[in-house]
Length: 299
Figure (cartoon, rainbow, N blue to C red):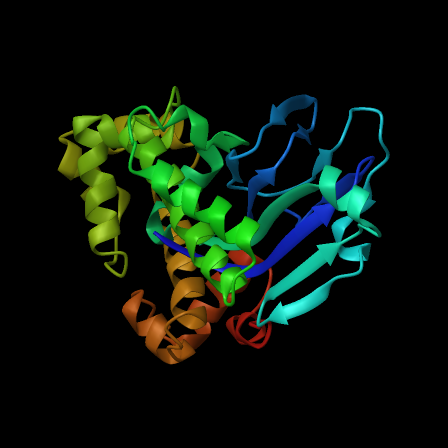
């Protein structure tokens, strides 16, 4: 699991207020409430967050933080922010001491969330993951939340940078806790992993994504016929066995091009493509853009 912050905001806002977040499902969104309460509205669902609460929206997307349910929202990107340091800014809408006294304070982060080959897990996670559901089982998370609260309140030198690192750790801990608690009540990919036969195939594919896989070879691992295996695989994962191999390869390609800085030729070779051209065609078919365009789009 790789979770890295793209940008963070320290927000101090006097009610009434409404803040709209929408990163287009491109990254996860984390919110820590230093001083609440705040109403989180995500689609038709709404829940109150209190002082000390932390939530992770693993797929980010369209959601609102409100002082009350009847307040209009303003896009967070349209609110004036003062840069504090690299990737961290501050929003303060309070004009006097009385507004500061009643203000809501929170620390919010947009995070790149990459599970590599385990990417299907993200689609299966709850839309909102609340740290409160994990504290009884993972009490070690409480000191991290308390440290975030202290850094937010005291405004010491370097507090914003420390908060961003703590936010990364808390968000990663929320995901780990969800996985260790059994990934909730979900099926599909996780159930396929738990299936002794399909799980062996998926593990083999992830171990050697560049292998020249055939459906016949994968079926042999499960001890099933080709047709029975293919039908069982599609029913569990919603895609064909070879389609799954291609999806995994392209996720890894994005990671290797972006994070590891490998050349397109190196990525093509690692993933078992006979030529750079063949890899580029597969990449564009799966992602809608060429590997070169994906590299140029990197920040």
